[in-house]
Length: 456
View 1 (cartoon, one colour):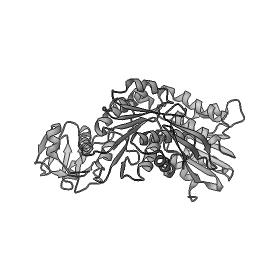
View 2 (spheres, rainbow, N blue to C red):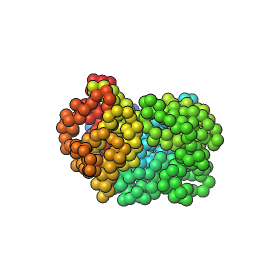
View 3 (spheres, rainbow, N blue to C red):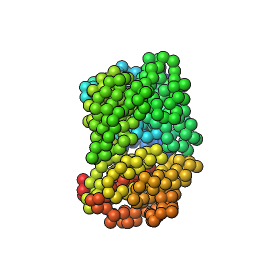
View 4 (cartoon, rainbow, N blue to C red):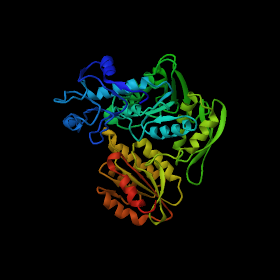
């Protein structure tokens, strides 16, 4: 934290009841397995856990607690509230109010973590950056990012994820970003939003929550760009980024180097500077444009933006090229998947030389569109010249059927990871690229591990 807070401050601002007086704290913990004697413990409730069941284990091991029920026979200072999950956000809001630097908020269906890391590379050249770690981007994770703010930080970059309506608006009420972007809208977590239109509305809360004087970076190539412009609050500055030369931030002269990493000229408000990305795939040019638009809105010069983009090496599990068994190249894109990101992965794989193998796990949370979405991925893989498709899970079987239909391709759909690996491993040689992708629930990183074990 930038400065300590007290339970009395929280109670006076947000209500609730103090028991055993107040206490000053400058750290927050939420895991009874990782208690900190100098922290405030918040007893959270989740779908599969309730920290209130373990409050007795906390007594005497922290400075104080936030809970929905009193810890009896304890002298620990306690802030009693109606909802500890809400209280976590309220504590985070006070931490945010201590910070006066630019606060960047990023959301989108896919690529937002890559944009976040690109921004960390850009701003990190001459700023002390506080940035979302890992995937701490929900109503638990965003507060933890705000708790990690330190006095030396002068830029805050917050990734915001959502699986249903109003979640982005809630996260914005905590983090209060003043430069925001929706990276894209694609069919991801459709079950939680009801439709792709619902996703666009929910993600757009990162714009509608902006205060006057803030800046909004808009993906002008997205189908919902006009919708977001129409919903924008008054006195919010907008900046369009996209592949067309009419947009304020756009690329020119895109090429892929021998590794498959893009290089291009970044054009910002008419000023051009060359960029060499260190991440695979032309789709990452789009991520770079969004990051560039945000950095430009914050006042950074084009040359500095370009240099920062060139030092970002990507994120584990997202288009990472690894040495595989028998000299093969394994591209680890296993972190997550939706139709948009799988399409981008297929396009990238299609540009590789030699034998091209796609290993696809089930894409989760697609609702009634799940069967057709997987079938479309199989068709696209076939059309783009992918040599072999291995799939894992019941949903991805539709991709195998579509890939094999009318051709000599064999259907290779597996229900067990070990069986897939056993059939796939002999196909690997120095002339083969294997790209592994799937939703988190498919645990595709275990396939990557099996194909690269001992080669990294």
